[in-house]
Amino acid sequence: MLLKKLGKTDQRISAIGIGVTATGGSGSSSRESNLNRVYGIRAGVDLGLTFIDTAELYGGGQSERIIGEAVAGIRDQVFLATKFRPEHASATGIRQALEGSLRRLNTEWVDLYQMHWPGSPCRFPTDETVESLVKLRAEGKIRHIGLSNFTTAEFEHTQYASNCIIVSNQLEYNPKERSIELEWIPFAERTDITTIAYSPFSQGSLQIDSPEFEKIREIAQAHEVTVHQIILAWVVSKPTVITVPKAANVDHVRQNAGALDIRLTTEELNKIDEASFREIKQVEPYRIRIGNLRGKPGYLSRKEAEENKLDLVPDPRGLADNIRRWGIQKPLPLAVISDADEPYEYEMIGNNLLYWAWVLAWGTDRPVPAYVFGKYEARGR
Ligand SMILES: NC(=O)c1ccc[n+]([C@@H]2O[C@H](COP(=O)([O-])OP(=O)(O)OC[C@H]3O[C@@H](n4cnc5c(N)ncnc54)[C@H](OP(=O)(O)O)[C@@H]3O)[C@@H](O)[C@H]2O)c1
Image (cartoon, rainbow, N blue to C red):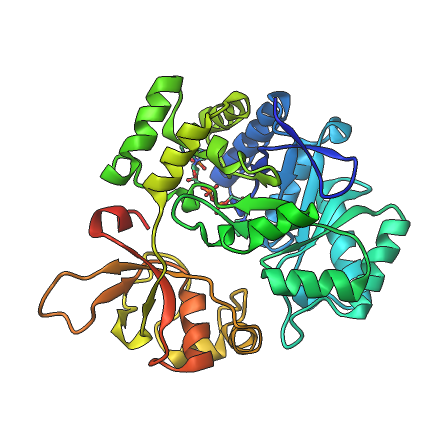
């Protein structure tokens, strides 16, 4: 069973945990699916997935409520991580946000309290935020302080300016999005910061039957496990990385727990690295079609993005400020359009807010970093 150290602390956490994102409302079928989630979380904890991650944002608090139900009576066996929205980062805002999370989570303390996203216009937690977090920690309401979606430079700045120990940063990491390997992971390994890898399965969009996964399928076969289990073992093979897959299906929960016992050889890890390597290209936004949101919330015009009527996080205008100010370079996922009659060469297949933030920051001529997927690999996004 793989346990890892949290940052520079003596706290041990499970290398694979459970991510709990939005589910249901109050209807009966939702109630049923919520009960399944409760059951899934308890089954996961029994099998060693004791790190549970959520956020006040997810499902408007519903995800925290589900966890609250699931951990009743077993609170001491789990490590609970949640996040506050940057809009709640003032002294009163953060206290209120935490009280809400504690109530929904049915607990007196949160083990890891994370700032969900860098704020805007100030990209960093302000002195007020940091002082509030330190105070809440001294009161025993939170045990550790973490960040989420911070670039390396921003993390370093925050760590230095706040002079308070920040133990972790939560970032996207999976075979389709490996950009944190360039700067963040070496930094985190050097400075002993835990990376909490989110969306290890690219939100369920991995095309594991595609040719790109052939080598990984072979490795899975050799270990008599699934491709998804191999992916988890690969993600947590980096010394300071842990991960929080979301799994509503209890069989998935069991498989994810099974991945805690898989050990990959260096040769296997190298093969997976090679098979999932993807160059970061530079593509001008005017060459990208944005007509299809694939059922996900997002915007189809610059005006809509500026207004952010759906109150999406991060706010595209705020993110644009930060892209300009801090030179953020997260790659945009694109698919090639092969139709010769089509005026565009690429189609956006995710991260709509990042696209608009880039356009608001730099216009449509300045190339955006991008991962370009073939039609087959882009399916399911
Ligand atoms: N900090 C941030 O800004 C941020 C952003 C996104 C996510 N997160 C965190 O990361 C967590 C996970 O990320 P995610 O929700 O984006 O998606 P994900 O974990 O990459 O993918 C979830 C999908 O994978 C499927 N799955 C789970 N286990 C599987 C298995 N063993 N075999 C096959 N399929 C499996 C799930 O199906 P079933 O549900 O049907 O089992 C679901 O469709 C979230 O819950 C959240 O805690 C954080």
